[in-house]
Amino acid sequence: MRGSALRGTDPIEMRLLAPTALIAALALPVVARAQPKPALPAVVGATEVVRFTTPSGFIDDPVALDGRRVAYAIVDGTAHAELHVVELATKQDAVIDISAVTFHPIDVRLLGARALVIGATDDGNQVAALVELADAGKTKPAGTVVYRVGPATHITAITRDGALRLAVHRATATQTGTRHEVELLAVDSGRRVAGGRALELDRNDTDVKLELHVNHWADGMTRAFGIKGGEWDPKENQRSPNVEAQFDLVAGKIVDKKPIGDLFEQRKRYGMLADAGGKLDFVRMSWDNTGVELWRAGKPVPLELDQPIASYDPKSLQSAVDATGGGYLAFKVDPVNAAAVERKKADPEYFDIFKVDGAKATRRARVLATGARHRFGVLGDTFYLLERSTAFDRGGRTLTLYRLGE
Image 1: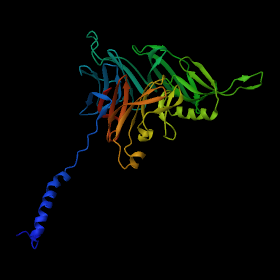
Image 2 (image 1 turned 120 degrees about the vertical axis):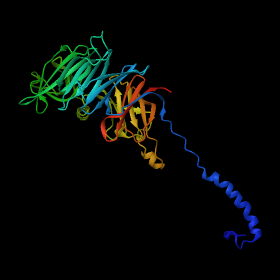
Image 3 (image 1 turned 90 degrees about the vertical axis):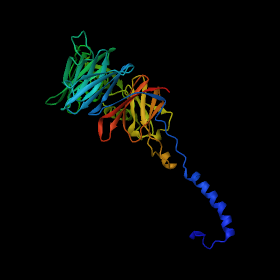
Image 4 (image 1 turned 180 degrees about the vertical axis):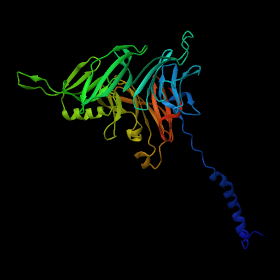
């Protein structure tokens, strides 16, 4: 035998080794062939409807849905901005140049054959315009501006007395503080339908004549909420206690007053509302990140999730809720949450969608979002995810629509 490995080996040992070596040789391929891991489903509980991307510029934040159409804006710096209105059934895409309106859209509303576009200006103000989406008797081609509004401090589409209106708020510096003025415009024509009384606040956000200290705002800056000094009671020869009060700038008067019960609760609640960005209906994490609070009409209610809250990244919470308590919220799974660390295995990075009903939130869908950040929105049974760029907190390159249900 020439093999050096067998030199000096007894023939009997060779006969005994041969079957063993054969068995080992046959077993090697079985041992080396690792079982493939099952692929994670990309979407659970929903179906992808359509996906949009752009080779240049980016898809900006505002997205509008009306049941049969989706509208989104593509912006290329300060060179070009265009609104895309896509029929979901046919995927027909109508493109409208909105460069003359804004290069930074912050809200879009589909209003039949027209669209309301609200944008931000370089100096921090806002503008708005109603634009045609389709030819109207061949006299108003697509892109025609029906009317313009602004610049103003804030321009917001709100529902007032059952009708959609534009609330236009202007804040003007005075020698002693700030004057706040609002007007309501008809959305379809831009016509002024209501004015109101200016609210004169000093540098401490107090209207001295009304004895009202403003804490927060709502409804497009048409309502100011704060603490009002008590009334003088001549019989008791003293003031009544301070009250919570709401000043309606359109009506020009105090429209609601409520006694302050628990002073500690009131101060804590007002602190949260001061940071709510002009909203009374929203969802936020509790102060210790151990729960979720659903705020309705400016008051919190603990929200019960049907999934462990500790599995999610608290900074990823987004919501779309209304005053009735309905709507949705969304969370992204933290892959290295405490439970995952304990079992030494990272969780898949799903973006989970919850349906809010009363004080409960039930997970309805999830989308695999490994290493991605998304902006979330919803209308009816359709939700969208706008994937953020890596180092840019405005807009993104990919917009995807999903319909709830398998």
